[in-house]
Length: 368
Image (tube, rainbow, N blue to C red; front, side, top):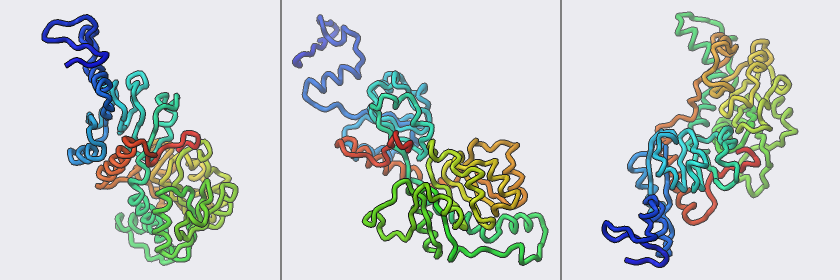
């Protein structure tokens, strides 16, 4: 069949000007064929996400006609260059491709929530590539982890557990006197989906909740949330009043080491700090000093400025003394992560194919 403006070879003989004579890649002359028929080229998706066949079927239902190329947990260098060169969408489990390797790329969906390193990648320098995140996928789990740590710290569980594990029975009621969550004050630094999940659980325990948020919501936006919202300049008030300070903020230039020695010095000596946001939001050396000197009661940390946590970190010693609980960045783990990530990506695929706004689109000017 002849197509206006295009010439294809017949049999084994190449006609002058045919696309085969130009040694054009198959992917390119297929695009020319779509254009000749006035058709929209199917979306080409390259994914390094660990998706099952059921998840891939969900993507194909959300945006019919897509060309999906799965390379689970592969690096860009492990993906065939001719495939990567055609990608409109890249689902990133880890490393990002270069702009030269993926010249047609229009959108990157991250498997994870954090983008503090990704936003500085040269891939996004031109502003032509959209970036979306997995924010909210693990909010339920991180919320439950945070509540678990609040209860563990309040009821002196680390000390009780380790002493009994060592065969030491300590009949000292004063040492194990708990702090009740009911009536206590929770100070949230960050009120995204994780912050909301923590706040819901805290309110169920009868806690008062204060939340630092970049923009104070209007009355119509609050959805009956019984939360006192404050601005950045009111952080000292939050720190001074809170029995538990929970960090659930992204890492940006504004939040890096937000909780430094001065800020930690504004906390109650009976208060606890829990970090489930980003490690570098807290000055770890200042935190270790504050706990060691009894200026705050203790902490639970799941994220750290350097991971794995260095062997010479003073936090290890404090953990051995029952004053700090350390976990290896596991708060967001869930057996449902892939299913939730797939549902989010499928919805964003549906929106992208229709030219609609995407969920969790990163605002590069804000840093998240």
